[in-house]
Amino acid sequence: MPSHPLPPGLHPDTLAQRVAMERSQYGENSEALYLSSGYVQPSAEVSARRFGGEDEGFTYGRSGNPTVSSFEMRLAAMEGTEAALATSSGMSAVMLMLFSLLKAGDHVLYSQSMFGSTIKLIGSEFARFGVESSIVPQTDLAAWKAAIRPNTKLLFAETPTNPLTEVCDIQALADLAHNAGALLSVDNCFATPVLQRPMEMGADIVMHSGTKYLDGQGRVMAGALCASDALINGKCLPVMKNSGMVLSPFNAWVVLKGLETLDIRMRAQSARAHALALWLEQHPLVERVYYPGLPSHPQHALAMKQMSHVGGAVVSFDIKAANPEQARSQAFHVLDSLRVLSLCTNLGDTKTLLTHPASTSHGKLFEVQRQAAGIGQGLIRVAVGLEHVGDMQDDLLRGLDTL
Ligand SMILES: *Cc1c(COP(=O)(O)O)cnc(C)c1O
Image 1: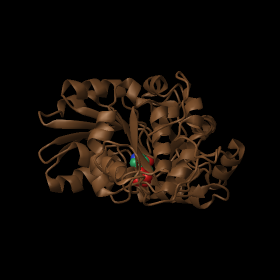
Image 2: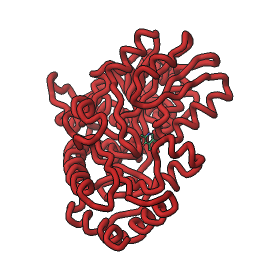
Image 3: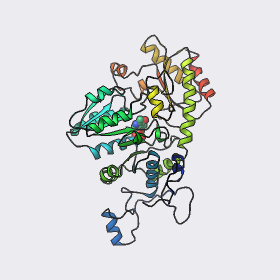
Image 4: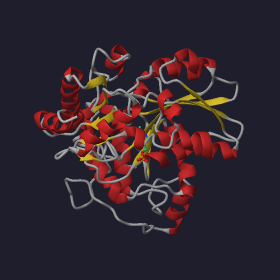
């Protein structure tokens, strides 16, 4: 697809404003939203070439759309990959990746701390089609190494994880994957390309839920895969054309415009998260704070190296309690006392969102599984937005001070 003839060597924050499809004949400054399912062909000959894949023009919405292309080009530029492919949600990006890269008898290795639906999709759904998988502890490199099999084709990691912000070593996992003839995919949802560019650390595929920070204001669902031209256009695009989990042009336009402010939002939300984490760590009723920017975080040094010295915008904390029942009722009290911040299952919004993982994202696990995963009944996740930190603290104190 043609793009503006931008000069080489532009910085990521410039690319986030400028990479997109060429302007139309009207010269619009904000990228156009092209709502069209079909495209008029200039001639039968050109149409035949487009359908044959020899010519790049648009034909039908399941195969491509100019607004969706703009989003893909811009995200690829920000991640530093040759290409990207947008999908209807983060989970459909995972599904497209698995469909495109694996067959029955192949083996996938992934962390036990990954997003819950990712674990279900690989461990249950793809298992029905003969794709084998093993789960390993997120931060135990020796366990990753020991679990590799001759048929291992894909290592899949997420860093930092939800909700405990565990960090794994991307470069070390990439080396492990490549020595085994496998690929490494990284779910970069929590850090975004502003803080972490997995490709520069050896990853082969970067996966995104665009629903989170890329949109940034909690409006639309979106997803994407970023990788080499060979993987995206050679492996994933043909599967996409026949399966159709395409991103709608409207959602692509919202997320495309979201990318323009991603850098300042990530930095401002992370600064607030850091301040909130420091404050929570001092509170007498807080047992433990999980935040990669704190020296108390087990992978603090690695996180700072990998994430541009910024801890991200998600903070989780455990409330002190004598037993799980008390922990749960105390956590519920804090959440029910909020008057400004939202009790809401999402993250990456400019509005601060709180969740109780043990009864929501991790609610279907047995208590022993939950404990093994470190998700206590007193755990609260705060996806920090852009409100004033003092107001966030006051809202949390409404509950913490009345326990
Ligand atoms: C939300 C999320 C997903 C799934 O994305 P959807 O857009 O909800 O499908 C995957 N990974 C992580 C880390 C997420 O937070």
